[in-house]
Length: 207
Image (tube, rainbow, N blue to C red; front, side):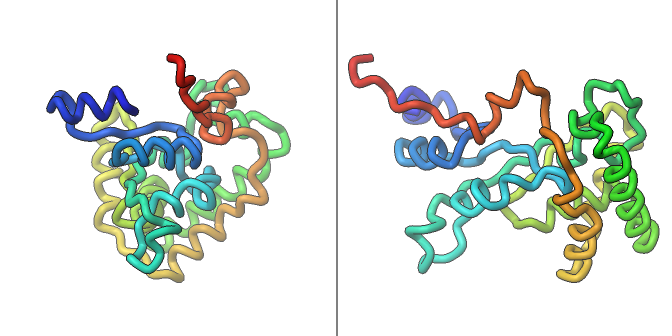
């Protein structure tokens, strides 16, 4: 962070962001230089950042300055659950590991069906439902869905037009209960790189 701060001061970069950083790392880094955004996985199927990452990053009010003081935005990758809302082949490397587990074969099909039913009721695509749900989590949240097809890009852009009430958001969240989603969100070889295990050790003063 010290090196990055120097680059900002020299005008070589403008902003600093972190990806998959732990709450402790975010706070310590922000104390050296303001962090503009953290990039994290967040979707209807992956909500583990809601309790430990989002609250300390989000600035709510002056009265909560000492508790939620950082004012850091959240850039969301895999907002569509790595293809959960699309018909991907079972062996596709994009499919989350927990979808490969037999315990989830029923859960995922059921939650997917519930999401599709909600989409049909309101007249929009499942991908739009998932993206709009993320967009409604706050003005400081920006999803970055990936796509290789223009038709999917157009569908994704359509999510900007959706407006959910609190009741709508609850209906969507309830359609994908986290208690029915088991397994890891990424591959075993990558688990140690995720934010729950990514606390950066303090720098050695002799370095």
